[in-house]
Image 1 (cartoon, helix red, strand yellow):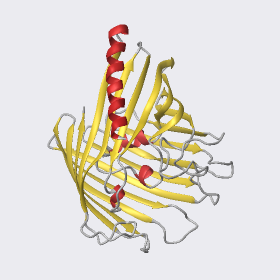
Image 2: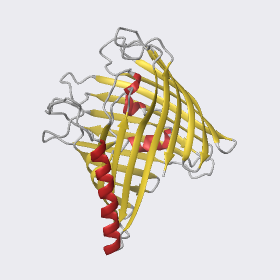
Image 3: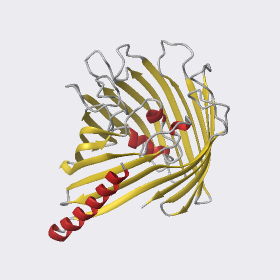
Image 4: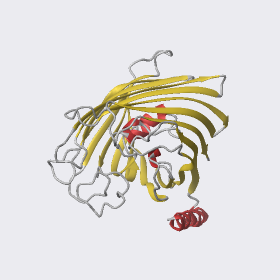
Length: 354
């Protein structure tokens, strides 16, 4: 997989050089690196395995992208990602070094007034929006990603734009995300396989900014709705998120309620519900503190299977595009069992962008 990644990068560089020389197409490269040290402070990992003082240095994410501009309104973006976990979700078990295509799409701006179209392997409608408010993806995934398995990118077509006081994203997509589950064998009902049927998901995100005053203009009322199916129409993948957010120079915060029906994999179509509240406050110009509380019940018809998560941390911007953070994350089960344990993780995290 490493060879594939490096060959792909080399081809990107060569293609960019040739295209720019012949057609003078503007191409810019970008990337991100997450470096982490994590230590289990609890007796068990959340999956039930014994902690045994487990700790690990990791490169938890590496991304390399190339954005090309063909004209004032037409462009494209391609991005590869490598996940190099030795301790996926601190389960104390080995996972492969995975390299995969994260994004690859054509972008057409001003397709209509204030409207942009994206086609291909594109950012999903919700995750990027919430991550822009959380601002600490290099420390921990979102609850929507970690608990609800909402993909960050999807194969499909999307339009986005702004109308009056609202910005929006509408997408039609396969619904299975961007990767094939390891060992899935092409299973028709896996929530993480590529598309193997005729059904598509449709989703809409809207964020309304109702206030014009300087003090209140950072307030948004947010909503997201998704209607989808798995292998057959009886297997649902429906989601409804709603809440509010606030963003200013030094302070930002967000609260979201999650409701789900089905997961694209089970005929029982479990109904789940959850909540995520987080905030970041910057002080002394370069330092900031952050906190988050998540709760998630994957099936309201099953008792004692819910859990909650608390994250506390402090960070600092070292220089432009380089940040560090120290954090503690604790997961508390509604009822502990052999496969569901309370968990604590202390971590040191670095984010580098270029």
